[in-house]
Image (cartoon, rainbow, N blue to C red; front, top):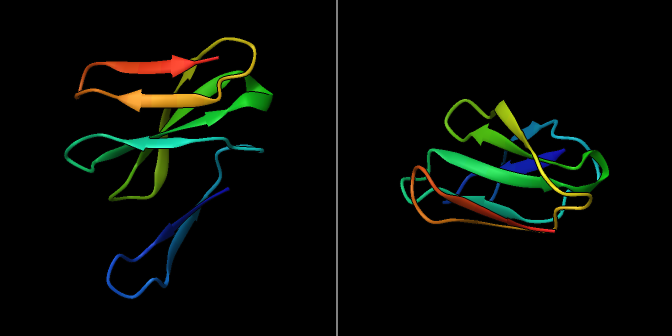
Length: 79
């Protein structure tokens, strides 16, 4: 799971089941979506940060380890 924390208090805001183990997250510039690499499933999942739910996934190479979000339309995944 991915753990979401409240910015001001550091308290847990929610847990999002994304698969395990996760490697690296990256968040869109507007903070709306987080992309999290899941090497064991060879994919990157998209998490809606307001609702704290998985809203999609992207197939990647064998073991995605890094992800960088450039803007709302471009995501770079390293394998």
